[in-house]
Length: 333
Image (cartoon, rainbow, N blue to C red; front, side, top):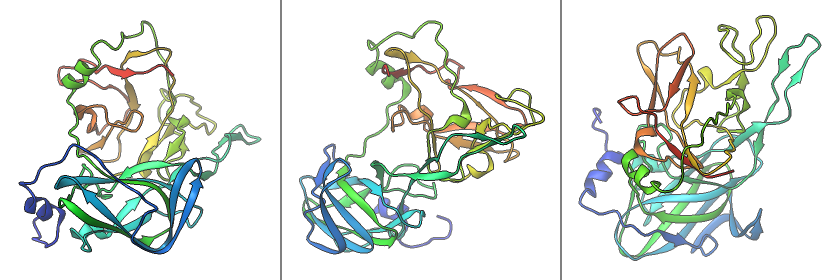
């Protein structure tokens, strides 16, 4: 902002500040494109009918009939394909023009997982598995991968016929769905609780511990399980052997990186969430994370969770300003 650059996303939003955000999504038939280079139509691809392969030199344009003018978010359902393993990058044009500078570099991430079980050498030290790419459908919004804009980008579309173009900067991918999505405001905790008011009770005496090193998916291969010998409170723990007991650390330092764990709960109801973590990297500062449950941030208050600097491991129960723990509604399974 202070550099007075032209073509920024902030300037773009100011230009359309008076425009509304329509509440209905607009679906785009991905295989019904008007112009395309280095693309191929799949009648069926990994369980999805009608998918579009876009190569590393592709450009594809769709006509979009927009029933109501306004600001929309753009979401893609996509799957990566075997290639160099780096992030996918696209330019996004609306009606033949880049809406703002950063629309020239929109990235879509890959999925990584452990390539096998943890092995143990002849000295009893655990050896972490190699990281391999996981190929499955994922849905993502076009957004700022640097993290300066926490919400997905909003694009203005006029009422009637518009065009949307995706041009490859880097890497191929298969697209199963594109839509102009309604920009929905997150509920606050009070609204979230009201929606689930009659949904279930909190199970009594239920505790499940999910080990940090037992993550199932991650956005980058560098976010693998690691070991810490500095504290006797880590589990598992050994002062003589290497045992994996946490994930993240100094590699988990850029906006947009994420780690995912699977959890199974015994019944519908409300659950508290406590995180054992340590932020000993940014002295005098905080590290911030967002919480997603089944791919969505449940309410505003957990869109930014702050971890203050401390050399010790701490238990942080997700709570309001008064210290009252949030109750997260989870379905059985």
